[in-house]
Length: 596
Image 1 (cartoon, rainbow, N blue to C red):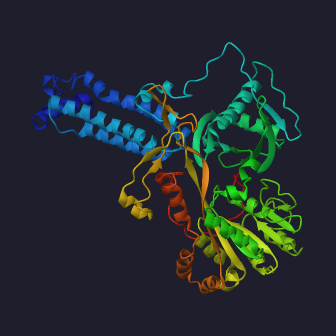
Image 2: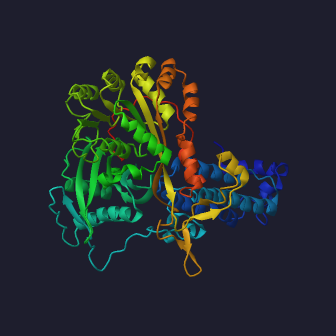
């Protein structure tokens, strides 16, 4: 290989053929001046300083922010790397001469790099997974310590303090570890997970691995997942083991799904029951904490949130307690609450009422609740259901249609003498009927005994303390099918209130703009003519026929709630998403259970 010294004369002889912008950068020595220097030393430093700052922001702020709030990290990393590559190419391939080329390369690369950061801030500030207080702005990017919770906890002069009492279901308190010990630090970290969840009104808290040595703490607030904090891998595993210990689970079993309860007390407040579910996965141990499982599924019929015509339809459906009724709803959309409420509307003291459940969320007074465990050596789901039906019950509620064998056992029952409720993972009345036919395998058999279908979706209610009213455009009202002359105002989420001429996060909803959930429904009793259409497989005709009923569709019921100011058009769009295609019967999952 030729040396650099041998190549320099050749380069000098060809210098006349090279563009001036490649030979000199405003004051730098050219090849003609000698072999000692080609460009100025300060210019590469100036050019690449923005790249160093950009990489620091991506690695130390944006990537950690995306991981913390469960945002699509891989997608954003591709966006950032693409911007970085474009900036590098602009610097290397800029054809402009001398000082103009240097300025264009510097300003252009800065603009490209900044655009990826700005795009991240704009998009994530609208993402509901990011709490209001944790949304980024320029100040928080320049000074990441300004992010809530971003500063590392400094060593306090006093010992960490425990503020919660942990108890097993035997009501025996777990002692607080001695001061200034690692065990106390783990106890305080576990308590912080729960305290943050209580403050955010979370219904579920999950600890899941998000990288090799990092866990994310995710909260479900009003049906929407939000990132809360992150823990190191070793700290998270120790916290999980503490919860498992209090709930009296086997610490040595790191793979099998385990579920049990614990109690939490805070001062004079009433003890809260926490359902602890742990399970091993490919990436590590996972934990789910279901807060107040019984309270989450307890509803009175009047508090289900149905429209008056729908509630009358429900009462008419229950007046003839025979046949099969499908209960449709996606996971975490209130199916369990609905099933419990409807079952309780039957008198369990004068009737034989039984349930088949994967997880018993609450007790039903007078009913026999049968739990089926997919990991046990007992009978399969269909066999257990068959043995229950042979005992001549009056009402049977199947909490999950786990397979086709279960559907076939249901249609074999004498539906002229028994009412069977079948809870299904789907999002509308029509898709439930289609999924039911597919599970049974024969439209004729599936249509026999089918008495009704109930479908629901949960929406977030607007916080009445901070919601914002606005006059809707007539064209919008026409698209929604609302009367233009009657609906003068709609509402959208706020999130902030004025305090002393200054906007602050709403203290009622913690700045989210929403508070609690409501349900949109569709309830149909099925006639002999409807069953003939199901038998013929003419679902389009069936859909047209159901639309003629006085009981409104799920979409129309949700629009009614928008007109009443209970929720927003933005939330209506979020929960709508179009009807899904009928899915296969759900299999018994080993993932941590969530309500409804």
